[in-house]
Figure 1 (cartoon, rainbow, N blue to C red):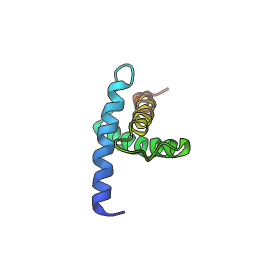
Figure 2 (figure 1 turned 90 degrees about the horizontal axis):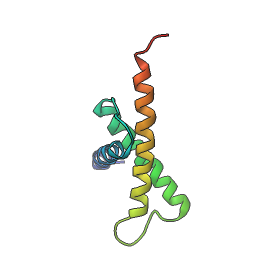
Figure 3 (figure 1 turned 90 degrees about the vertical axis):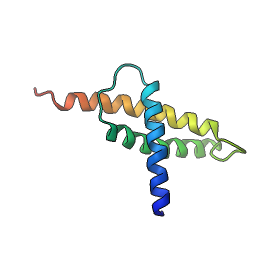
Figure 4 (figure 1 turned 135 degrees about the vertical axis):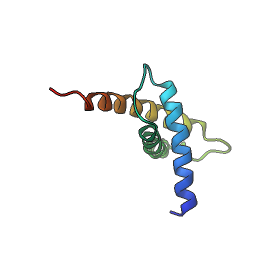
Amino acid sequence: MTITGIITAIVIGAIIGFVGRLVAPGKQNIPIWLTILVGIVAAFIGTAIAKLFGVASTGGIDWIELILQVIVAAIGVTIAAGAYSRRGVTR
């Protein structure tokens, strides 16, 4: 992977993470770096799911793949917000 590929993954991951955060229900008290990280992971997982269903490469914009990535990001942000909020709670 080239440096351009890494930068592209970070930018696309950030966008997907923020869109996933907007779609996720409720308020998410997680830092921006965690949103970006969730977005990057969601992009890879969403692409893998799209490949599994055979919709990863279509003519034009891959809308199904993009929707899958956003859904995975919303789930990831919700899980991260729950885990991050419990981080400071002592029992």
